[in-house]
Image (tube, rainbow, N blue to C red):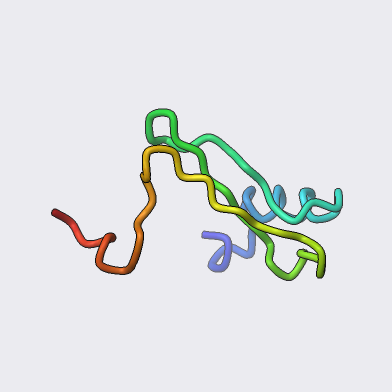
Length: 70
């Protein structure tokens, strides 16, 4: 819709505001129960920024094969 009707998507507006505020990403609730999503604007990261993975209960895939359905 955004491209066809030349309307800026609300998520793009939010992303612009987040970046303008000096943030390199945003954490927000997922539609999955107790889930969260993280968006990182990698081009906004500085040389001293660090990302660490936190995966309680080993809930994230360990390798590409882990993404395959059971």
